[in-house]
Image (tube, rainbow, N blue to C red; front, side):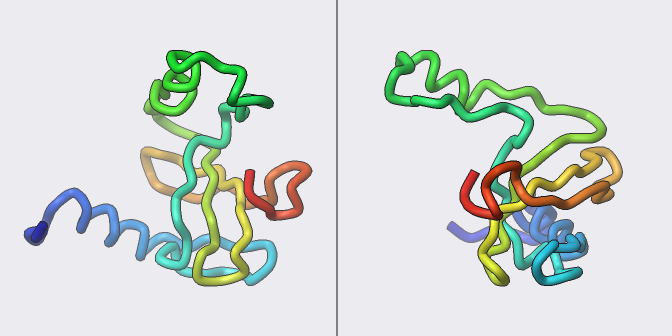
Length: 109
Protein backbone atom coordinates (compact mmCIF):
# COMPACT_ATOMS: atom_id res chain seq x y z
CA UNK A 1 0.00 0.00 0.00
CA UNK A 2 1.47 3.31 -1.04
CA UNK A 3 1.78 6.10 1.50
CA UNK A 4 1.51 9.72 0.54
CA UNK A 5 3.67 12.51 1.94
CA UNK A 6 2.40 13.75 5.28
CA UNK A 7 0.76 10.46 6.25
CA UNK A 8 0.72 9.56 9.92
CA UNK A 9 3.39 6.92 9.32
CA UNK A 10 5.72 9.39 7.61
CA UNK A 11 5.21 11.93 10.39
CA UNK A 12 6.00 9.35 13.06
CA UNK A 13 9.10 8.16 11.19
CA UNK A 14 10.34 11.72 10.84
CA UNK A 15 9.79 12.43 14.54
CA UNK A 16 11.60 9.25 15.64
CA UNK A 17 14.47 10.10 13.28
CA UNK A 18 14.87 13.46 15.00
CA UNK A 19 14.79 11.92 18.48
CA UNK A 20 18.04 10.85 20.14
CA UNK A 21 18.39 8.27 22.89
CA UNK A 22 21.47 7.85 25.07
CA UNK A 23 21.89 4.07 25.12
CA UNK A 24 23.69 2.92 28.30
CA UNK A 25 25.76 0.55 26.13
CA UNK A 26 26.37 2.54 22.91
CA UNK A 27 26.04 6.21 23.86
CA UNK A 28 23.87 8.74 22.07
CA UNK A 29 22.12 7.34 19.00
CA UNK A 30 19.41 8.39 16.56
CA UNK A 31 15.89 7.27 17.36
CA UNK A 32 15.86 5.61 13.93
CA UNK A 33 18.05 2.84 15.42
CA UNK A 34 15.35 1.89 17.94
CA UNK A 35 12.00 0.12 17.74
CA UNK A 36 9.14 1.02 20.07
CA UNK A 37 8.27 -1.93 22.32
CA UNK A 38 5.21 -0.77 24.24
CA UNK A 39 4.16 0.44 27.65
CA UNK A 40 6.75 -0.23 30.38
CA UNK A 41 4.51 0.96 33.20
CA UNK A 42 2.16 -2.06 33.04
CA UNK A 43 3.82 -5.19 34.44
CA UNK A 44 3.59 -8.25 32.21
CA UNK A 45 1.44 -11.03 33.70
CA UNK A 46 3.60 -13.71 35.33
CA UNK A 47 1.79 -16.57 33.60
CA UNK A 48 -0.11 -15.32 30.53
CA UNK A 49 -1.41 -18.83 29.82
CA UNK A 50 -3.45 -18.67 33.03
CA UNK A 51 -5.38 -15.59 31.86
CA UNK A 52 -8.74 -15.76 30.16
CA UNK A 53 -8.93 -14.46 26.60
CA UNK A 54 -10.67 -11.33 27.90
CA UNK A 55 -7.95 -10.69 30.51
CA UNK A 56 -5.15 -11.21 27.97
CA UNK A 57 -6.91 -8.93 25.48
CA UNK A 58 -7.32 -6.26 28.17
CA UNK A 59 -3.61 -6.42 29.06
CA UNK A 60 -2.50 -6.28 25.42
CA UNK A 61 -4.84 -3.65 24.01
CA UNK A 62 -6.73 -1.68 26.64
CA UNK A 63 -4.18 0.96 27.56
CA UNK A 64 -4.32 4.60 28.52
CA UNK A 65 -2.91 7.20 26.17
CA UNK A 66 -0.98 9.21 28.75
CA UNK A 67 -0.17 12.89 28.51
CA UNK A 68 3.19 13.85 29.99
CA UNK A 69 5.88 11.54 31.36
CA UNK A 70 5.52 7.90 30.41
CA UNK A 71 7.70 4.77 30.66
CA UNK A 72 8.15 2.90 27.39
CA UNK A 73 10.15 -0.10 26.17
CA UNK A 74 12.48 0.58 23.24
CA UNK A 75 14.64 -2.03 21.49
CA UNK A 76 18.03 -0.99 20.10
CA UNK A 77 17.60 -3.00 16.93
CA UNK A 78 20.42 -1.38 14.92
CA UNK A 79 22.89 -1.26 17.78
CA UNK A 80 23.52 -3.44 20.83
CA UNK A 81 20.14 -5.24 20.51
CA UNK A 82 19.24 -4.53 24.12
CA UNK A 83 15.84 -3.59 25.53
CA UNK A 84 15.71 -0.26 27.34
CA UNK A 85 13.17 1.58 29.47
CA UNK A 86 12.78 5.14 28.24
CA UNK A 87 10.97 7.84 30.18
CA UNK A 88 9.60 10.17 27.52
CA UNK A 89 7.35 13.21 27.71
CA UNK A 90 4.53 12.46 25.27
CA UNK A 91 3.74 16.15 24.81
CA UNK A 92 7.20 17.55 24.06
CA UNK A 93 8.78 14.21 22.99
CA UNK A 94 11.69 15.00 25.34
CA UNK A 95 13.66 12.03 26.64
CA UNK A 96 13.94 12.28 30.44
CA UNK A 97 15.77 9.01 31.19
CA UNK A 98 17.05 5.85 29.52
CA UNK A 99 17.87 2.77 31.60
CA UNK A 100 18.04 -1.01 31.56
CA UNK A 101 14.83 -2.86 32.44
CA UNK A 102 15.04 -3.90 36.09
CA UNK A 103 16.45 -7.39 36.51
CA UNK A 104 16.84 -8.07 32.79
CA UNK A 105 20.40 -6.98 32.05
CA UNK A 106 19.03 -5.45 28.84
CA UNK A 107 17.25 -8.65 27.81
CA UNK A 108 13.70 -8.82 26.54
CA UNK A 109 11.21 -7.42 29.09
